[in-house]
Image (tube, rainbow, N blue to C red):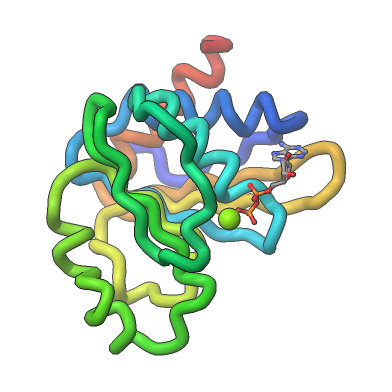
Length: 160
Ligand SMILES: Nc1ncnc2c1ncn2[C@@H]1O[C@H](COP(=O)(O)OP(=O)(O)O)[C@@H](O)[C@H]1O
Ligand SMILES: [Mg+2]
């Protein structure tokens, strides 16, 4: 089973392509944990994911809303950003558990701030570097995440 994979993304188009593959191969209930510094590409990648799911309209950073649900694609996309969440009790106020368990695909920016807020089996994606490219580490934490990672990496290597 695939556990950890490293990729390099040369420019925004690569970031969108990786996101699109994630969206095309996502299954209901899949959770993507996105980490990396400000400007690393977490939102850009989620925009690609939305495109891969066929979500219509624009997907913006949910930094202030913290959670945005996008309907209209193959599956709903729940897009969260935990950057401004200060305390786990704020997650309860956001109805976090319902968002996670409510169906669809969940993408969480700054997921590493609240490791306990994610289901045990997910796909963690870390972006690093702020120049012309980004380093990516994909790490699955269970069979569901591993299936997703395998589908994405196969598509990536096939040039899809
Ligand atoms: N692979 C890449 N190589 C170089 N620049 C990238 C790449 N992917 C995205 N970018 C750029 O980096 C920035 C990422 O911003 P954003 O997606 O909002 O990051 P974050 O959500 O992590 O704060 C954008 O300006 C985007 O054009
Ligand atoms: Mg962002």
